[in-house]
Length: 201
Length: 201
DNA sequence: GTCTATATAGCGATAGAC
DNA sequence: GTCTATCGCTATATAGAC
Image (tube, rainbow over all chains, first blue to last red; front, side, top):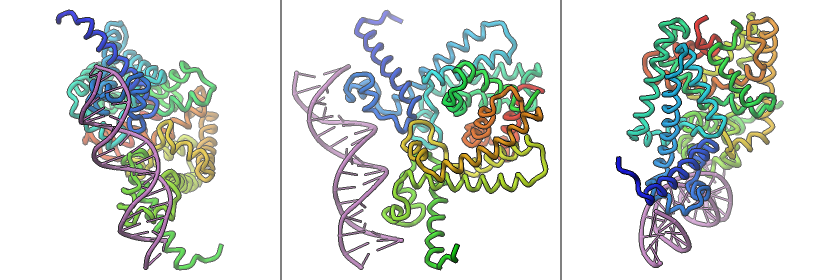
């Protein structure tokens, strides 16, 4: 790990700017509707220059998703140090996810048979990070089910997917559009329905 | 309401076939990835013929969404005749929605700033049906909250959106892809997490 | 690596014959 | 109303000068 040269650092900064733009546009319009021209315009460079950094639109998106996963891993690492019951860690993870989503920084997953999906499935860095996040959450889920906080009758993978799904929950933007709740209130409502259910306890 | 001629009936049948294809393709790939050429090929007619029936791709999708809403209204009407607690009606509605989704017959909503979304917002028939479905569910939600079955502290619109959101819950296809659960089991698991929450009761 | 300019392909929509 | 053929546009991606 040698010290990066000035030239390398300015290049890295540019790539960070690109990824940030992609992240936002991806969250706002989705992969299919986002165009490379838009990204270039948003970053403020020529489209051809983009392709010197990333070989394809899919690679662009994959870099954005990978970056978000790195942010998630950083958060989870901090959260793991906190003293709390496993289910509280899970709630914190879901809350973080929804905060990122409402902040417009959560690139929407490739819903179905997209070219992006096949590209991601071959992207080592992406898959590795998904695995790491899943394992971190998985240990909390197992512990929470063993302790009876999370319903032990639920398949663990169902719990995992349910938490993941908060990242693209359409209830979040809908409730915000209603205008009667602040972003914080929206998150607490969805968090409550997620962990407590719709029915009265 | 005069009896339709033979010619009218064969035309209606063709439009039904078109809508059915659109419905499936929309559920499978989403609006942006679905192409009009695909629809034409799937129906087995020329693309130009499609445009004699529907003036645009958006109109095609709107017709599919409207048809699904009609199916939903028909189901809700039957469900309303059944003797049951309000919350049971809501569960039945959510279950029906998920069944349609897993059957590949639920056109995915326009996630965000799509051209489809603006088109739907000007489509009278679509908006009317959304209103009717929302009102039907709304009365059950109000009754269930008054009776204390659904948590009265939750905003009614949050309950409504949460039930709507089962139509595009990514947990459904993910759990199915896991291969360890039948479609019926997948639905019951998601239904349980929706109404009971992740935590043990 | 950055730019301007262009290649190439696919898409929504239409023209016009039958 | 159905078809074949095509328009017009936009998108991803690249060539080539600097």
